[in-house]
Image (cartoon, rainbow, N blue to C red):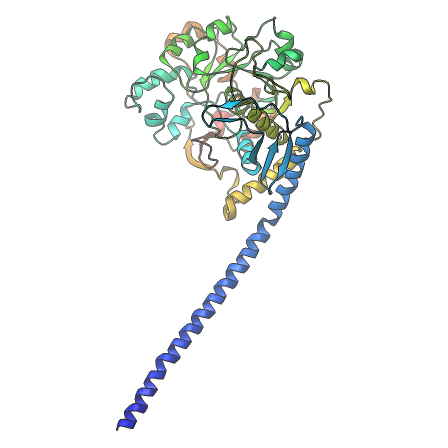
Length: 475
């Protein structure tokens, strides 16, 4: 009996061992299969993006060559298919001292070209003026966002919408007053003292639209350097208070306030015969800063070609200057110049400066629109991954719709009636669709009547998109 029990016990003890072996074998097989699947999937993903990486790497080489040709001493070092470093030559006068970080301005800057091309190509399709349709479409647009655009409201939210509308109605069109591709060539004129070194006046005035900043004077004294044409002026809060004196009765310029409106501005707005709007842009956390950069954003949303004047600080500078005032400290000039150079070699802007005044500007060393479009498509595919086929509205986070019978009022208020008789609002907000250039009409149909707005910050995937009915827009 003892032997039988022992034999039986031995037989039973082997059964779990066999089961364990079978389980281990099964698990091992599963792991091998999983690893093979991951490896094969990885290869498929790698194969899928290999062409995109190749396209962007080729684009980087063109950007590098463009910087070498046009950078006035700047050079570009490629890190990978997206990242590069722009370097100033040794001995560059780095006299700008950053009080916050206790360092002098660096001589090299790292940029993500993929991120930059996605951001700036997006601007070509966007609206950069605050409108009523944006506030209506944006979640809590009137309650929370509108309050951020009104100074000294006395509350962090528009609990009293009627009060907030009283502040904003003066500068709040129902729909976008300006359209993508509305102009072929635009000049953005900065305030640098470099403008006095060259007579760019006639060239600036030859553009379809001219955008100026803040309190820059436009008169005969500076005409040969900065021109006389006046179409748009982007102003910060401080400069807005002085616009009556700056405009001197001119009705030509549209005023666009950069940040917030203010009850004091309303009195000024009612006293001038100029359209006035609020800028609806984004915050750039990298690159150049200031009103000049916002002017470029505004121009790109309306113009096919953006030429900039008075932004560069040429090699050998000793101080930041204005063409109409004494030298002053301002934004970091090396950082600005490097970023502007990057934008030129991404096809966003064309730089005009005294250092280039005598050379033939054929722009053949800037990547072509076809090359830029291919690089943009590749960068978008890499960013979106497997969802890269979302189409042109893939970045729309919020959707809104304009009713067929609600074209909406133009900006203003009832007590502006006398001023309105002399205003140029009809040149913009009430312009019939058929009066737009063909490229602007084509863009409207390509975008299926959708206006794109940024929602917040630097993110690309947070657009507010508003659909317009074709029969009310196309007249």
